[in-house]
Image (cartoon, rainbow, N blue to C red):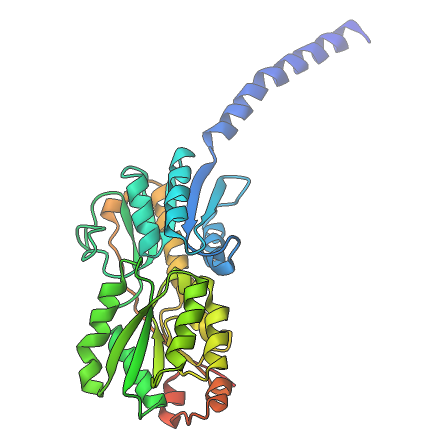
Length: 328
């Protein structure tokens, strides 16, 4: 190699070497953010996809500028608390959780890492935040029900089963929302000529035993209150209701898609997408204390006419017309 060419080559090589640390430094400036997802459902449950999909739409790509650490409670609140502590140990930038048990676990684990929640009823009344407009602290997010929801569940059941006078409510006593929902239902029960009673369940075995025992009583229908345990075992609950020919009102669409009779509540996927937008804002510098907690603006009624026919129920035409979705 001629001397001039060799010197040029060495100069070029030296310049490139000097540039490499600068390029690496630029990449390090765009550090990967860490988001913990704490859900009280079975591992790999697809319900979280709207959350991760919305983050991707907002410019956060796993493996590039984002890492998501998933932790699952599978309906077990003790496990949920342990998973929350593990997420804190991994030093998340933000933790996303859903449901009151998840928020309880997250707030017990940290009061400094920002928390965005979805599907939490009455977060002020439960002491999670100071107010909807100014939540304060490290948590903000989205509620899932208004107090009057109990009246809508009973009204829907009465329209499908006009003779209904004895109605059972299936509850998980470990869910802090239970008292809120029970008050919501009991406030209007007398107006509908309905007597209600509760049946507590904590696991799949108790769910099966409870529904079998209820079917042996003179009851006219069931209401399944919102809870992660019910979601984890939704297919089992729907199957048991069908076996015992019980009309059941559910809180979420997922039950009706699986063969349940009717649901009235929010679309969870929209709550999760909104939560992703708050996570995005926090990752870009917003403080959770300054982001107002938002209530749902739309509730959906979903009917399964196939199930109604199997149960021998005559679904009023006006109810079908009011439904946001009818499964035939």
